[in-house]
Image (tube, rainbow over all chains, first blue to last red; front, side, top):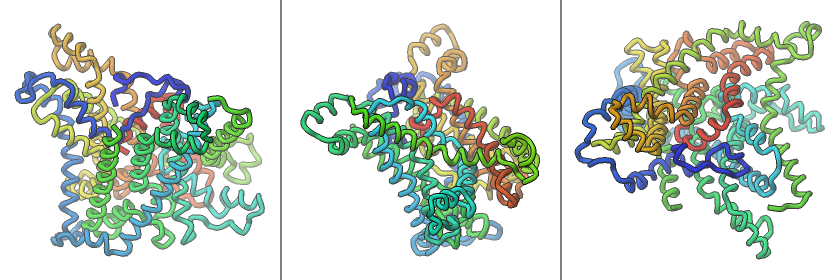
Length: 333
Length: 272
């Protein structure tokens, strides 16, 4: 969103520093089409009065973009139709690699794990964020600026660093087991990243830790724009805090909820470094995710076609999520 | 809204609790990084063992990895910034045939995950003998950043005051003068946000450098850290020190310019 064209927020939560976050993600990007159409075009669309100048400005970016992004994307689709080990001649197999995504137990499992991660990266932080943001915007407490800085911090730290830190926390002699022993829960201590049932949730909770700050900051921004009179009217009508939360707060931040879900669901789908560093997909194959399968198949197993198919499916999923958000975003208007 | 003193107190408790949860892993890794590496170290020096950072720097070869990261980040940020400014100007200040279609083409790039492009890129660049070069690591990221930067700067130039452009044009300024000497200076805040985001994404990127340097000749800092974790099994002290070193550049920028990071990631976070 253009920073200048938007009035600066004066809400106290953000200290007037941060500009309001509109329904951005890709949804609104696509939705902006409407705004553009309404804006009178500077000149006839048929014949530009600027001649070739705009193309000249566009060309360098377009070349790099086409060569290093669009072309590889097309090649990924092409490769996904072949069985190829990366060295010898490829054999055309049609859509078989895509059929495998559904029928291959390992691949299906990796998408299942991604679904579990979506719960931990997106759903759980949204629940926590909604309650947290509602509580914090109800009462104007001091230190919110500091709080925002702190909870947002995990977003800027390299995922590899996050993974290294949490590996130490989850280690057999790590801080988590130390904490459990200190409070007398010795029986609960375990090798958190070596447990067949608990490793995936343990990795997921790292995602919860990363996402919650982003979601909370986003929701706090939205809630601070809800007019106070709404709450006062509701209170006069006898609505309790839970009632006002459900019928005023949550509906008012629907746009922010949609944006935060897009960002966090896509982050969950694209999880690679976290899994690579913490578990490498193990123990067994209990924590493999689609991105990890792309890497493993292309560069370790020599199943390049299959890897490309998984990557294409992943890309389509991300497009669909953005499209869905776009739809919801437009209905909001 | 007026709330009772009890609720206010409860709010502070919640605020503190969640701040602690957010900080705990970071404090943990800092504390580990500053703890004595060996029993002998524990006897010497103060309670904080800063020498660990020097040792990690040496043993983990972080000077080399950090240099690679700096080179890659410099290439990506400078190239992507210039290209994005130009493309953003083309889309923002002109209406031309095909502009809509071309713009949607750029939007696609914001959504495409690295996973989708990295596989074919590796095999094609290998054929050209370009793997294990800084270009193989940087150029795909330039393309990704350009997709975002074009979207970001176009939005800015659309919102910019059109009369400034018209006035400058009437004064006889060429397009390059309008862009670089009239618009760019005004666009500083949006530009800073864009540059910071591009830097952060490039510095923290893992998959592209992992794939593009198969024999590990050219490791960026996050990759070096992952390798260090594999080799360094005796203890966690130096690993933690290495992790702090890798995170530090972006964290320092964040602490000083956090409103750019937060606003940018919330408003333009389409890419990630």
